[in-house]
Amino acid sequence: MRSPLTASRRNGPGESTAPFARALDRLFHERFPGLYRYLHRLSGDGPLAEDIAQDAFLRLFDRGEMPDEPIAWLITVATNLLRDDRRRTSRRLRLMAGADDDVGRSAGPPDPDTSVVGAERQRQVQEALERLSPRDRQALLLRHSGFSYREIAAALNMPETSVGTTLLRAGVAFRASYEELHGEPD
Image (cartoon, rainbow, N blue to C red):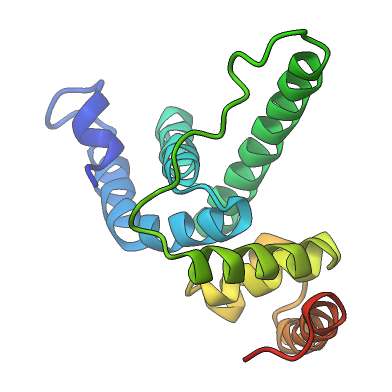
């Protein structure tokens, strides 16, 4: 994955934004994978997760300065971008449902790299996650995407000391939700 700076650098070398550009480039290489994993788990759509993660970093680049908590800022922006995309998609689907023809509604061929069992398990996990509160869902997904307690606390605007309790409670709620929907996991 290329840094957004290599694709759209606006200032020449040596200009006053060089420290910011270096910090952003370092942040991109260190944190893009975790942000992508979080978005992919939240959305279930790899290409969409990649686009949104890149867009969040581009917005940080356009901002021109690091926020106090860059990880929390990126998570918040990316989550809002995903929410906006879901609204647009939902609106499009409602409009398409009213159309008489089936053009554009095809799901396309299945991905040959994805096993049926893996896809089913992913769907079951997604169903169980959707039954959790947004805060619990985000906390679990952020933790399983490699974010630290401090970063989760900043992203969810909660005390760092509450993260462990929130994750424990969210884990219990997830297990109960999963078992209610699908029985005991294998």
